[in-house]
Image 1 (cartoon, rainbow, N blue to C red):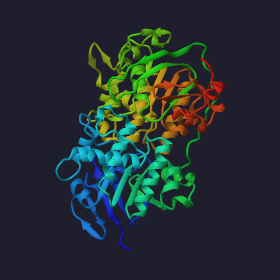
Image 2: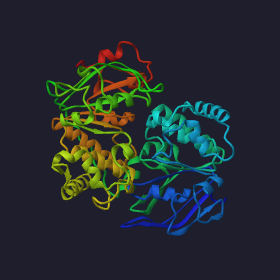
Image 3: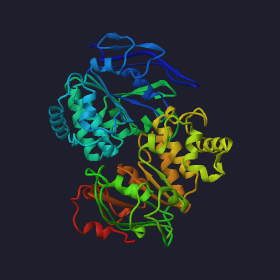
Image 4: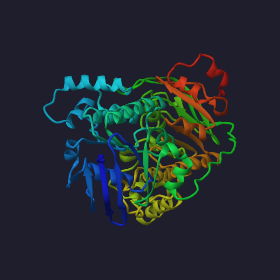
Length: 510
């Protein structure tokens, strides 16, 4: 049988970095093939080369036995090759249906296309309103748009770069059913993920990259996740050490009956949200994407203010009316879920991105930036958090997603915050880096900081959190002691199907 895709000796270099070094692999029709590796191993570059978004320096690409000459995404789509990027390629100012129409050939019939999108998204368990504007969507909802856009074109080869990073467990099950059906119909799937349990469940074969080279192949269903992880990192994985929490007597963050209308008609209203986070503990907020997390994080971070100052208290001080900068002066640090554009300015150097939130560390004096100190601050973050980057002068957009995430988290932790608000801390981060970030959050809390983690990964929350909150339809559950609850109960709360008393019985009241 002729391979659906065959790569022969692909090489690609950037200034100071060899991204792909003599990579060869083949994928058969109907095969689900994983490409594994640490952040910076060359996976995303290789996918861009296959899709035509980047050109290889040397090597050959064959599709169904035919050599593909220099190509671009449009010609790739004509061949039946589709790709869902880790960082979404969507226009934020227009609607879902308009975004998808722009990627399809022929004349626009938005009404007919909207009906198609509604039908397809509901059939595959990823419902999305085609008339909503993209800037109103959560990250998880944007992921659905990208996947639905590809499925509408009935692809022969589908490339998925971290497709489940921001999907709920229920949505992942639906997605896997979809992918298996596509594979049964002959579609080949290239699957990039750092979630090794998903790779073992879904994929037929795997190619492992390290430092831009192929270092091995495996049959995931016949290989343990530990063996796959060791192939990826080339060494023993770090072990998590979570010592018992010793919360302070008074909370660092208090939310008191916070009620807020959505900023637009597609948002979620918050109703009577109340909880507290003490120094010395990690509190996790679980929930299905689009249930009010974005609205709550905006109010907690200061991106959005509230008329009642006492609805949010930081360090005992009424803070809901304060802006983001004023809250940072009270000791808060914040990592948003969107790395590019909100957590960092893509074309700016890392030292410039360090100035964004680190300017009070002596980097800026009398309105002037000390570039030497800014570069030293950025280098300190790069070294401490093992960020793969070509020094402080490297642009944020030149880093892999996971390495940029490590830099942003490290930049905020370097500020020694009293209150640390972090959203999706390990989205798209490899197993080794994820363990490092999680351990850093634990260490920060045990040093006395109050840490609030917003995540859609239940495994992550159960690994590092001391208490759990669940948000559903704009309401937040009473807090649950992590050791006295389980994934089933949290899952029921996420879908608003929990009993009325069980959560209260397990709650640690503030």
